[in-house]
Image (cartoon, rainbow, N blue to C red; front, side):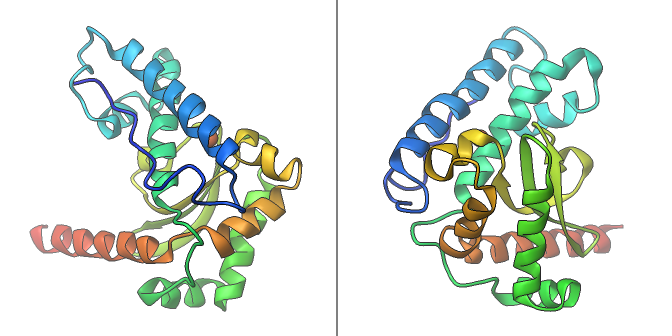
Length: 210
Ligand code: FE
């Protein structure tokens, strides 16, 4: 089976006014689809043809001879994850253990959101802002272009697309305005908290198996 373009988990106009229907139609239907199509074209009739998207990212990361496939596959994965990080109207958060960890690491929930927005705005050029967890430690980071934390064993809990195609139609050059709307009116914090809980269960299982 080729890699499939996942459906958006909401209607294309469901995130308005924070993310317009026009942005979502182009972002999902052209950009995300383009990365999926390119990935399928490059894995056709190769050993990677039947692999999952995540496996393709792992197997091509850091390989200079497969940069084009890595970029397409990583972008396909990052976009699929990005859609699931949002829901119509967003939600109040961070919540649960995520809130505790955010306060531990950044002093307050506001401090945590400020650190995320700061990393997103400071990021030069195209890329992604992330909340990741590795060895129980929460951190905020950004990656350039298609780079993805899943290639380095970190577990992403949240991402925001910083490519201009993500916000230019709605916010023009105002990346901070977009990121603020993302954090306060689009993020599905229950989903982020579930990702953290799943990561902790997995880490516990790995520890008791060791
Ligand atoms: Fe994008």
